[in-house]
Image (cartoon, rainbow, N blue to C red; front, side):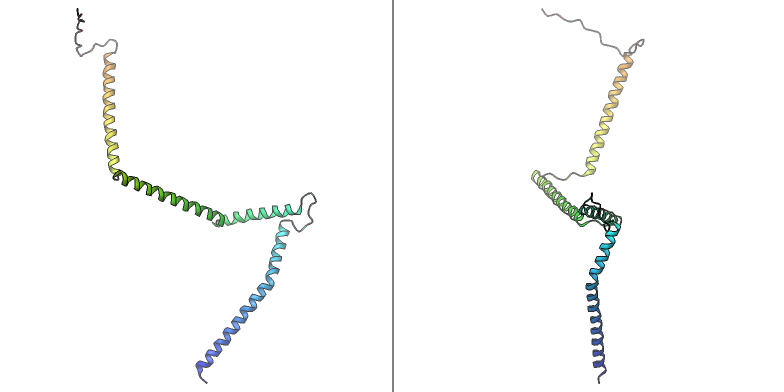
Length: 177
């Protein structure tokens, strides 16, 4: 017999055996899956004191609701420690992000449109800074001049000090007749 033929059939039978094993594993998982679920439920009830006889003053449904609420809150905190975000929060933030992107794009478009309408050109920020610097220098000069004039005025009005500047003589008022 051909060696390749035998190798082909050997591999085919090995693959069939592996497939059979996978099918058996799936069957076992389906059969035992409910058992695992029941075990988890039993553990939950035990840890949250739901396996004991309920207190007549508290309805059993309220006990379950509180336990489920506590579990959910703790589960979300645990996921938060690992940096996991609940899908609802992610989707809400994603929608908000998209809305803000659209709003920003619309504002940019409106700005471009208004610039195009006005024929305005973009102003270079360095030019704006130079303009402010010039304005501040001019205001500083004006302020210094103002303070110097106040200083002179104060010196002239000091008691006991005579003015060094000659004052023009007062002209008598002329009466018209």
